[in-house]
Length: 503
Image 1 (cartoon, rainbow, N blue to C red):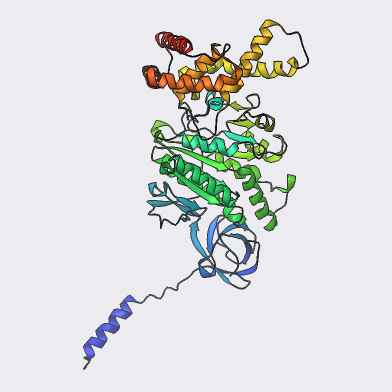
Image 2 (spheres, rainbow, N blue to C red):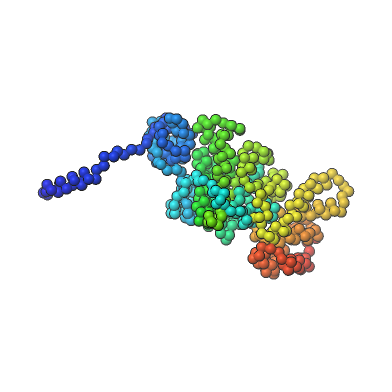
């Protein structure tokens, strides 16, 4: 083969033209110390707080401590292959997760990577896990109910779309069950759900996913998992990752529900990170910014105004208390950030009251604005009668000669307790709740034997569903109980009682 001189000169000219003398400059640092998921890196003066750092073998870390001549970084994975002297590069990117409808029905880790053996996720984009909360101007008033399907909550502690409602109580009192039931109740409601499991046992997470699958909820739910066996950094970023996924849908004008289960373990994970990063400890050894940790997460829940898209992100954070102490550090912090709390009491739980909600300690700062008109009207007296019963029951055990009025109040209170009991994973439609609470509040249950109240409820609602369906459709359509409809309900109660006896 003969090479012509002009061809050689042509190639050389092309190479000279394409040559760039600008050096490839990228900041690099050196690992000085590593252990317990923490790496101390010398150099990298241009690093930002929260920026991703690239370690050898494709491992990433996140810069949290920015000192004068070094960086404290948390490793987002096992630190087995990292050693002192390893190079570290800046990426110029903040931690981000995949977002979009492709995440529905999937189980992912705190980095948004699938862990359900269903292949990769075809995400429509990526979103930083840390985002500023919507401004006051962008928000609208919370006014649309988010039905949980749980009578005690929808009647006495209503939740609105865009609200932050804390679920608080001791371990094994049914906190997770309330969250799962709420997700199950969003079927066909157009609400996308995200369940974030933080620091839980892997077996517990498997059971939760199984319950959601059986209830048909995985079609509109994403599960973000960071189990107890995973490094503390992944537990720390998990709720922010779940929130970022939900914010994408909120930005598109959709309604989203995010459950953080639970933030007590999240705070413990952050405390571990902070102590390893040699940050000064404060009360209960938590760092000074522990309040900011949860406030910057929960403030991202919002009901957006119509001008800002009209979407909403509802947050249900969970906090575990010790011996019912709601005045501890983390519980009081989160109570002050949220728009109310649902308090679950061990004593009620052990007495067989499920869900074990104590309406005296529970509150919704949105209140009746997050209820349909029918529920607001009917449930008004319920809270008062329940509180009166709890007080009377405490004193009645010391008295033998009780007045007729007191005895009637006690009998009514016993029936309130029975009606508010509800089996797990059996959420009830709001129109059925309105009907049975109407029967209860108007004292149509006083002639029903206390041991047969729930049997009455089951049979009566079945009777209405089979023979008086227009009543249900009217409540569902209007959200109100008109005088004409009330007469129909009274006639239906009388007809049912004429056919059945529960005395």
